[in-house]
Amino acid sequence: MSRWPLRWKIAAYAAALGVIATVAGAATTWVIMHYWEVAAFDRRLTTDAQELFRDIANFERPAATDKNAFKEAWVPLALRDRYIEILGPTGDVLYVSPNLPGPIANDGKQVIHTRRIDGHKARVGMFQHEGLTAFVGADVGEVNQIGRDIILGMIGAIPTVLIVVGLGGRSVARRALGPVEGIRQAAARIGPRNLHERLPSSESNDEIAGLVLVLNQTFDRLERSFQQAIRFSADASHHLKTPLTVMRAGIEEILTDPTMPPKHQRTADSLLHQVHQLNSISDNLLLLAKADSGRLDLHPKRFHLHGVLDAVCDDARAMAESQGIGVEMSMPERLQVRGDERSIALIMENLVENALKYNKDSGSLRIEASAVNGSAEVHVLNTGPPIPPDRIPHIFDRFYRARSDCRISGVGLGLSVACELAKANDGDLALVRSDAEWTEFCLRLPVEV
Image (cartoon, rainbow, N blue to C red):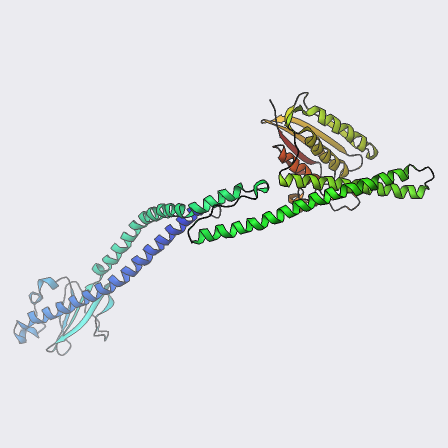
């Protein structure tokens, strides 16, 4: 039920509440009606006892007090189905109705109360008149029948209550949640490229209008923070370009000096490597800033993927030679895609660089391309150690490194850049698996027929 739509949850809760209310109402009705029915039943027993005494009084007193002379004809016809026992002044039993198995034991209670007679519950009262004592009772079955009728009526009403309240609750919930659904759809359309848009406001003063106001204020803060972050990344990357270029030129000039001692030359080589790394970080930050703001300079066109993969494989073989890593490529002769060729080449360069960087010595790197279900899929596999499972959900996050080996250079931007570029080319990038055998990434691109 936790995954049900909210309108169905409300309908289910309303139906459950309706059933509970029906049961509670029926129980309350049963208690009240049972109380009044018992009271009415007791009044009828009292009336029956008074009628019995009146009929007995119509007969002569000596005969009425003689147990051998007491006749059933003295009992009114309306009372023949009652439990009746009559005692004389001395406590002798003058009469016991045929439906009683024996005399009713006196339990000392004079008020009408419930007791068990011959295995059945009965209401019995003790009445006295001019020396005679009469126990008059009746089976409570007719009183209990009302309770049974209420229970049966309740059971019969529950399905109707469920249907009516369930469907009615869903209809009411759908109408009540209509504005919320509109808000959800409007919020879903707001993304990095249109953060300036806002949710439609309402002139009403209800909770929905308050929610829209709060969400729009949140979007205002998000837009300001997002724009500040983009400007910072773009400005930092732009302003780093010139000093990095000057530093690189100066170090390269120092390295060409034939009088440079070997120790200083090694230091200059290390500095040049760091400058190249800083330049790569700057380029990646600028690219991500452009992607966030929707200002990537892409030029989509039709081209064959074979050329891009051939060039990437040639570079990979040159870099893999020192590690003894074997590079293999498998793809059809013709696989035409549509996208920005330069950015797709950059995606592949980042994937291959990662595959080499995190591979093992004398390992393998494989690039496989094929057309699958209307898309071009490029799989990049390497035999490096598996990515820890707890880090897999974050591998495309910026500045996140899936492996914490400090001996491997990098700042955690390569996969983020590749993922953004894949989306910009109407494709996607995903990790297929990472186990003891292979770590495999898959790039999907739209096929151009």
